[in-house]
Image (cartoon, rainbow, N blue to C red; front, side):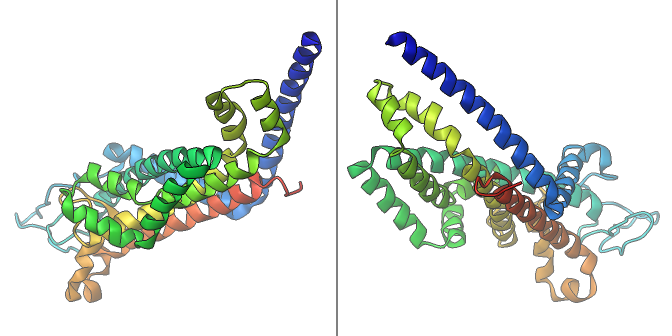
Length: 306
């Protein structure tokens, strides 16, 4: 009897691995067919590489004011051969600040999403798997947090804490976990009633093993898609906080605090090179992330056909 059980388990493992390999290949084929998703992925890779190689690509330091040949500061200089995107109100090269700003904004977004994802998955799995009073407590806390707009809650926490790069990552991550929690909880509630989960539980497997080996691998697709889409939201939140002065602080460049220059009517109307590149970078990045997220959602949907 034990021998037949061992053989059955080996067959299930082999079939699971083959099914997973087939799904991965099919998902990649579906993703490649989505041209917008592919274009978005390529542009995102370019932005990431530019951010990583900022010290090499940036023509000037993003922190230093630049003097002209006459010895005066090049303040609000228009785009030209020396400064491709012009300079800001302190005479700093805009192209260099855009490149370094991408490094800061993307880092904030990715770290914040990692915090939100880990928190959301942990709470969602616990609530969905164990249920009862644990589920009630976690979901009531989630409902309370959802009642407050993310930006308002982030601004409130940011005014209490000292605004800096680390705190901005922490704040955005700790106010953005609710959507992931509800998503994961729903998926776990569906999976825990499956026959194979009941079988593994009847065989005496510990809850931790069941969650790690049988539940989490089967909900990775929605987690990846939601994490991708939340990255775009995190970039927007960071930009809004920095624009309002409670996010990344000067002189550290981020796309959000570079938009703060647009609060001047003169700059807004007559010096568009000061704020338009940062706004365009945010727009392109968010569009590309959403294209990739939509492509992943379609590619990882098991109901989709080749």
